[in-house]
Structures are given as structure tokens and as C-alpha cells.
Image 1: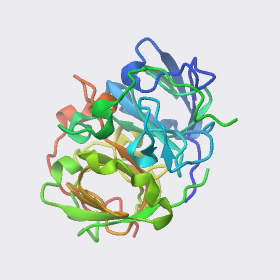
Image 2: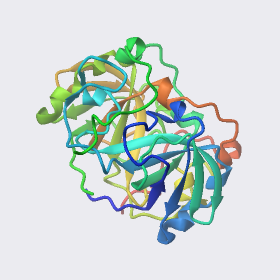
Image 3: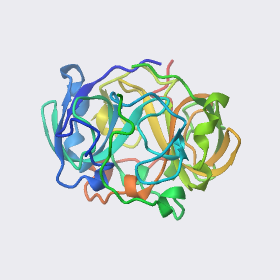
Image 4: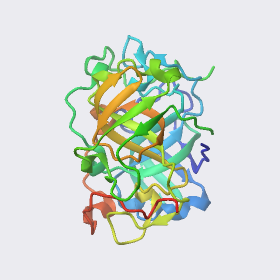
Length: 157
Length: 157
């Protein structure tokens, strides 16, 4: 199964250290998504969505580990119970705020992604598809850290 | 960028026609996720999550189109403004209910995925990462169809 980048994500974050962990912790962070011209026709109708999923390749993540210490905890956790980037298939997803669509250039806010990240897919964010009530949220319910920023633990050396 | 399957998804849905469109429309649909043994260690701590994201490969989707008629509308829409499977990188994501973890076998409910689908990743579903208030939801706000089931329009011939 082979993936081709469909664009590139530009952000102020050049290193993992100091990058927001999630869009919900990335107030004020803005970036752009440059979609390659050959895919621009697929952006029709996107501008009417307030938020979009960016699906991307963790291009600077260290090799996969099956057990990791996530940013927000002091215990070791199974990687599939975390959103850590060093995972068997290093695919990330972030629901960012869409500010505008100008041709094949998207302006986005609340972005938690490293500069230069290859874009894999864009999907509309929709409560009908993405909102589910949950009462239990595993180790995240009792996480020991509330830091909003990453460090370099999952970055390639 | 190369992806290796980390498991396989088993469901009652052998054909696109009649498959639920999203987990929110898949009440009563149960399935299993068979994670390959070499990745089982990564499932630690997952069972405490009530809902999980399955990231998967649309293995039976017809070739990508940039403009599609989504299941829930009668108009043509840019593929990135839809969740249609026939997309440049055919990656799907579904937030399914996790019933149990038995070794490397997950039992799940509210599943909207075809039987035999290659599993690419698992991530915990967490309101902190996945819930955002949105007021505008593009064409979905005025969709002309409320069907909860797919047909064969995006299936390989």
C-alpha cells in the first residue's frame, strides 16, 4: 500500500520541541496547506466547512515503538493507546480550523503540525461523523501532565 | 511513503451496498479487529478507552476521483469535502465503539467498514483531541439525502 503526498503543510514549528500537542492546545498557531495543483479540483466545496481533518505523514518521527511514554503521562503506554508519532504506520490526523481557501492554498489555524509535513488527505470535520459521547478515556482521564507542548522524545535523531 | 497492514478488520459487510455510512449510523453492527501478533504489544492500555479510531485502507474502492457525488447529496462535490472512499490516498477513519480486547483481538461495535479491510493504525478517541464545536458544516448542513447505507457507486467494478 503506497501513499503519495498530495501537498505540504507549512507552519511556524521547525522542531518537535515547543510544538502544540493537539489543535485544542494550539490557539493562535496559524499555518498554510499547499495542495499540489493536480489535486486542486478536489478542494471544491471545502471552504464552507469550519474545520477540516488533515491526514499527514509524521516525516520526522523516530522509528516505531510499540510501548511509549506519551507526552502527557509518566507511565509507559501501548502506542495504539496514544497519539504519539513513532508508530508502525506514522500517520497523523489533526482537526484544524479552516480560515480560507485561495485556489490550492488553505489557510488554517489551531495547527499542531511540523513545518514541511507531507499531506496525505483532507476530510471535512463533521459532528455527524466525528462527535461521540464518551465517559471513559483510559489513561488520559488521569494523566499526570497537562503540558500543551511537545518535546523531542519522538523526533528522529 | 509505504504502509504495511497491521491487522485485518472483520465485519458482516461483504459489499459496499448496504454497509452503514458512518459509525453514527451503524447501531447494532459488530465486528472484530485482528491485530497481527507482532503489533500486539502496542495494544496495552487500549481496553480502558470506550471508543477508538480505526485507520484503514479502502481496499475495494474504485480509482480516485477528484469530484464525486457523495452518498448523502445529489450534487457533485470535491472529494476532499467528502468522506468518499475513492480518494487519492484511499485512507479511511472510523471512530468505533470498543467492546473488549482479548489478546490481539478487538471486539468493536458501530462499525461501518467492509469485511477484510486492511488495518493501518489504531488511535484512542478522546474529546480533548477530537471534539470541536462547529456551527457550519458545508453541504452536509443541507444534504438532500439522509440515507444511512452505502451503495456500490465507489466500489471497484
